[in-house]
Image (cartoon, rainbow over all chains, first blue to last red; front, side, top):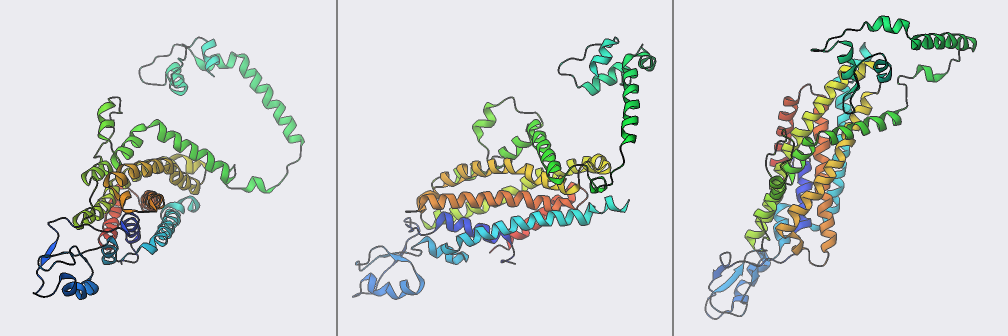
Length: 121
Length: 287
């Protein structure tokens, strides 16, 4: 159903057009604060996590109170929605296809519903 | 025609008066008018009747003298070709839109809405249905969303909100279409002035100018206040143009979708319910 709905492509297209390729700056409420175990700096401790999940570390050299922004780029958000910046023109194409289909459907439905009245008389 | 009646003693037809209504009034056929003149006697004795009779005699002689030419033209269903029909009906449809400005105002103000516009124009048509100023409100509710996590979510939510407003637009389009279709089927279809394909095409085409205007206004009222243009980085104009194209596609889609659903269905309320249902399904399942 996701693939059939025209709004999938419309919203996907608008989301990528509006939001892609931009870095995210967390506000202070959104930062995660983690304490690295003694002896390790934040970047050593958290880099496997960052590689696996994504995100950005704001103070890589600190030892305590590592501040972590869970999402680093808007592209991550878009990937969670299932869209991708490279797909945007494809989405436009889909929308045109839907519009053409609607016009054709209008003619077909009109003909089925009311077009035959003229002929049967 | 007005000269004939006026020369035989009828009252003057004023400049803004509809001649058809004036005629009914003059001959005493409309409610509240009285007639003292016997128009049929006047006609029998008038010089114009004699002219018409002479012309009929001439036509009879000359046309029966030339042989009948059986050609394909006489067997066509409609008197004029498709393109002529389409042009005439589309122009008439657009004139109709222009002359009933409440329809255009409600569409535009429904989808974009500027609070200053509605406050400063007391001359608006009394039947205008102003429901809400939606894209404007969405745009300014999310004023310059920052690029934090919450801000990005706000922007995505703004996109969703934009989708929801256009279901009301569909209702307007459908009602107008049903009215026009009722007229078409009662009068013009039976007299075969133009075909139903022309009717449907011109209905779709006549919606396009107002939809274009709505797309432009929605883009301005919505994209820039939210601040999406700041996300674009180097290719701002491409992204802005792409967003406008998508909004335009959405307006086209709304118009054609509502025409498709109302084309085969008898009355407007069924079609509206069906449209709401399909639209909500599309919205819910859109990933």
